[in-house]
Length: 216
Ligand SMILES: Cc1cc2nc3c(=O)[nH]c(=O)nc-3n(C[C@H](O)[C@H](O)[C@H](O)COP(=O)(O)O)c2cc1C
Image (spheres, rainbow, N blue to C red):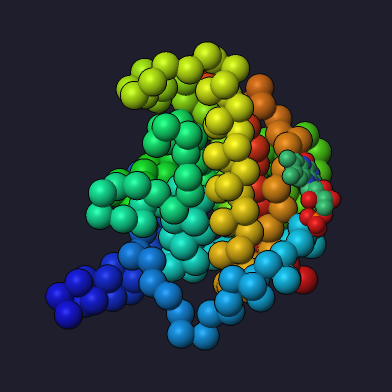
């Protein structure tokens, strides 16, 4: 009951607060809607959408999308999506009308990296991207492998990260269907510009992007 009231309070706070000035966004706890479609239905409906309309997601939707991308689903801290050797080497940036945020799965929050509308730099020119409510950018962090139980060659690490990102985008695609949202996985990203604006260290690799939002 206490947890429910706390979640409700956060949701009310979030729904009345603009993202713009916040250096940190505490995301509401992810719940299951009673009218959600099944996984099989979501798979039946899955497709790439490119007809986005510029309409923000609710905090609950944004939270659910990010949780599907890189969230924790168990007490032991393990995540929704699998990762080779249990090394979570892929971090997720959320690029909205208000700014570029880094998703922090452990604390279920977003940390502001750059304020402003940078959606256009998550593409090399596909204009639909600029309208999508959120563009997720999946980035490999080479340093994450330093804590791996077993060493693996760098090319294997990169391959593992790409496979993990594949699982992540598919989970987002399915949750997008349950929320009545469209999505499009994208390999065409202005990597140089995004690296600069999001202040990524030189060793990080931008793997994929994914537009998510309301569609016509
Ligand atoms: C790794 C990968 C990269 C992709 N890159 C782009 C892209 O840059 N732009 C785009 O519009 N679609 C991109 N797509 C989406 C594909 O074009 C799409 O999945 C394919 O045409 C099949 O259509 P469907 O997803 O509707 O089934 C990408 C898909 C994958 C898996």
